[in-house]
Amino acid sequence: MDDEEDQGVTDKQQLEALLPTTIVEAIPKYPNAELRGQDWLINIFCNWIRKTPWGTVTGNDDQPVFEAGFLSLLGRTIVSVECTDDAYDPIFTLDDGTTFQIIAEKDGDPWDLCGPNGIDVEGPGPGVHDDFMQDKWNFLPE
Image (cartoon, rainbow, N blue to C red; front, side, top):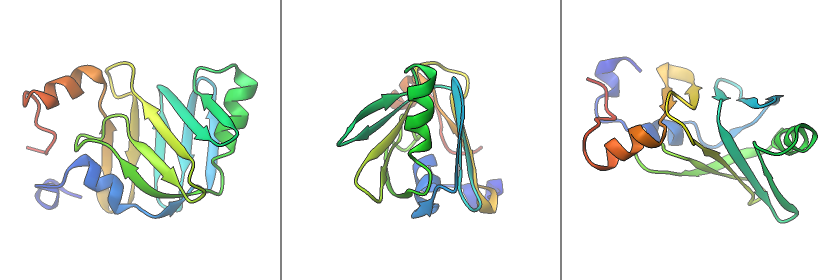
């Protein structure tokens, strides 16, 4: 989306615009990771948590557990997302009812998403999110 088209569209709405979408590649790059769909990509440079009925895996787990947990996302369809309008710590619900959450523990673009039609979301860290919650940061483009 160019700036004119993007006016009034929140980062959360940009994420929702992609849904439902299927994960066609899950690439663990310990300690980072990457998810890809048909026409989108999420780079993750922070912690994450995958919750299933069989257990929980995080981005802080040892490499073999990290990789197995992350690879279990392959082929799943993201059906919904829960987050604030600035897309802080989004929780993605998958078609099997499990969840995948990105957890930004640091500032400096802890994750980013590029999608079709100019969708570009820079995941906020805690400092930027705090500013947003106090109306000190405008998540909409200038």
